[in-house]
Image (cartoon, rainbow, N blue to C red; front, side, top):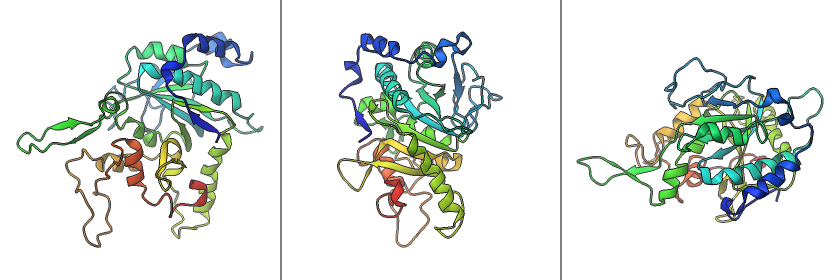
Length: 310
């Protein structure tokens, strides 16, 4: 395994983080005074599009400061959902950069990005702790809470998930990865993971998918968007874990996901008869979170997607 999970991000002390900073090579960008910029952009289809206000797009994401450079074709991303995960996020990013292989001549290195939930307080301070020492860009995204249909049809209220911390911190917000169309391929790693080997080769899955699409393996020759690959879960073995994924962002895929969330009152609960139109079918989550939902959204991951998807 090239990635494993930490027991708890709270076990990582600030002293450890300081020690990790001392291990950074001298050629890191933080050595350049001009690079000490608080970089945070809005999660619109193009991360550089700052022409809209704080309610721009369907996501309604905010922007504190526009990034001074355009997004690169490939990115490695993580998600900071709570201030309690800051130390763990820094440790994961350091382990990632330590094992990231040099980029071949003539190619852009992958951009390391952090999605910052709107639930996290003191966002500007978190940016200082992350960028540019640990990452290249911080993208603030609006929180998508986990809700469920209420049995009270009179008030039609939404109730929180049975796991309150998921709703308070994570929700469905990780799904916003799929709307970052400024990137061609994104490798996502949860902030409670630790990288122990190089993972850059996983971004080549995007190129494999492009080649497969051009050859018309699936018969339509169209570009595959959305999930391209994911790490198998420990149990059940035919499901994947949303903690490590490779995806090609697509605004249309993201909007379909929103329409099929368990909390969407306009969706039907189950598929009826031989109707192949799944656009309005609610995706149930067996664990109440994003892993269960995405497995429901991509039910053919184990048996129908290419071998490199697993």
